[in-house]
Length: 162
Image (cartoon, rainbow, N blue to C red; front, side):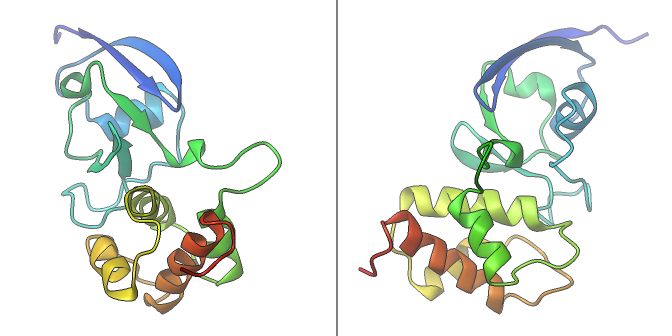
């Protein structure tokens, strides 16, 4: 039997403490221990981006981090984006711009876009494409995703083009 380690994290603004095996991946901790199934597991090698979360404000592949390694961290998952009555502007624009099909990659794209837009309120197309280049979508192509991020930037700035 493996010794378990105490882990304390804040996930989507709520404190959690749990005992986990040292080899428990953050993705599995979020999905199975906390029930946050919006974090998808795709390639399990950090390549596809489906498991992307915000770890202390920066995008991170949750399939590459052990839960014990993020002890004391602040984590945001896709479940943190929408309010009770409305979608986050990036979610709304993904919907309006048809930037998703099967939806498997969508949580990773959304959180990658959130990180970008929190650090750059008016990214140009090249900046958006560069920010999204480590996320893989096999359904949509990327044009609508890029358009959705650009429109979300406008919306987040109050509906005004810079």
